[in-house]
Length: 377
Image (tube, rainbow, N blue to C red):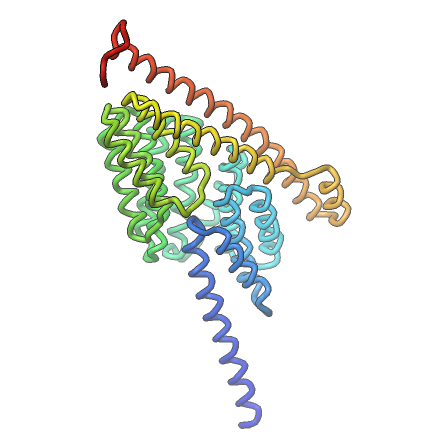
């Protein structure tokens, strides 16, 4: 028996070692999704090619890579990996995995502003969540379900309803033991703050942004902290405290300088330009307005590239796949076409909003200067 037992023991030890290594890789990669998504993608690819892994582990890696591409706002690649995960999830009987895939799909549609489809997948996920017997293992995904509904209702209905769902999301996330929960808590608090700004409740907005900053600092999430500081700066701007707003924005720009988030940078540059304009600091206004416009152009170019699939590429995909896979890729193409339209709409709205804000600030400065234009802020 011993000659047989020893090889079996060695195999078991090797398998256990591989499992521990993969778990460690997942932990490292998950922490880097927001700060270094390319590192997360590289780790995910390493897991996929690490030898014999379970279907569930493969799905987990594909979803993680999809999240990383979404963090980079490369929606074409994000959807591509999510579809691969969806196809694999049909081969297993595991409701937790199915819930996670449905939730990730809802996130993609929410990001693309295809809200009816997002709600459809959220409803499917919630039905499975409510039937799942072990509630402790689904608190995080239930929190995400509530939070996504908050995002959607904020856009479609009003912030009063959205805040109710954000609070439900926060309640579920706080039950989770993992320190990773702080990323979600920061994101939800930040969006609550934005809602309170729309409701003209500066006190609660400031509280929410400070909460978001605190949660982000607990896990050293620079980009999340910077977003929250950008929100706090907006409160200061609304209250006419332009110097304090510039201080927050400058610190946010400094701590997130290595992150490379174009959308974050665009918001920071816009805030800095508007506050310097309000202080009649024309040199800094022009500097940051130029950076804002340059970053806006990069975002448009990047997202056009990420969703741009040529007709030849589409045909190749359809020729290589049939049946259910063909349907999945047709859905992918439709989603990407919708994304292109969304990008155009967002760009136009952002440009109009910026022009309107700058015009209002210029008008305020002219009034302060008086008819001869010689007054000071």
